Image 1 (cartoon, rainbow, N blue to C red):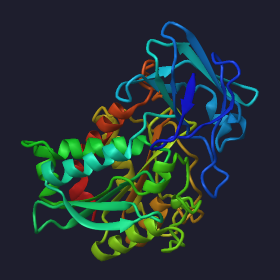
Image 2 (image 1 turned 90 degrees about the horizontal axis):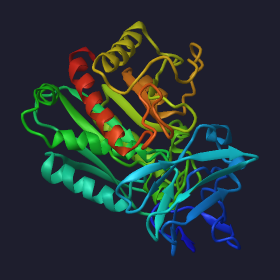
Image 3 (image 1 turned 180 degrees about the horizontal axis):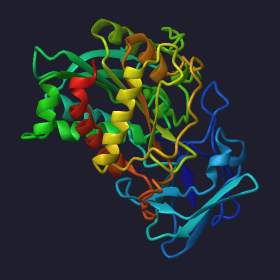
Length: 376
């Protein structure tokens, strides 16, 4: 057996391969940060029909170690079709295994979204979805941070912003963005036509390309959590957030969605701005309407489970959702998808995955279209 992770979003270290049917592994920490929980590796030179078990022995020290309960690892023979492998967590070790069908297999914390696919997605947006490259920032390591604009009516007044993957291990976020662009490529879509007659869309498909490429869970190349940098962004340590803020201040924001994944909660949910100093009944009403319409539209979404509500005036203003909602007095949400499954409609074969993330994005566009007249 050979185990490798020297590729885009790869992350694993081999600690003991003396038993090739049961290697002992460990996740690597984010660069310049104590955070870790993302893994992605390839096992090859396997014997089809043979069972192999894998143990990640440092799972107990990971950033959200309590979240491993109920989690099943993702696996693929071709990096295209991913499925879940029964997994167990005990005594600080995450273990999973199966009787393999092929001589090589990949495992990951979640279905990865590669930089190669990101580049393809940008091309799809530019050449098939009528997007323009409105601006392009640079990460610490010089990777592009594309800001796309979809503008089909020069008289449109509303500005809808959607950004993804501030936390690089949350790959479901860019799958969500692919779902948006996939729908934007369609023609004869009455809902989208209505939305784009009144709003321009501003999309950042990947806000943390360095962290995603390096196989980080939480941070950029400087070890900064970008979703805790919205009151202190600077070009040296958090140029990704600095760039997005600059562009927002040029054009304004009427709706802001920040797309994320949650390690622990097996549900799709939103977090909002109820703790902001400037929170008003108008914003509360918009939040309720958005959530209610997602449920009514049949989206894989629910309102029972989520984070505890912030007390009035006690929001963490370093978060993108709170910072943008406060600065622009707009409807602002963090949308959270699970690393596990959406237990309201579980799929044991796939858990929550890229396909479901994409469909959620399309449902979110429908709700946005229904609310565009209410945003101001």
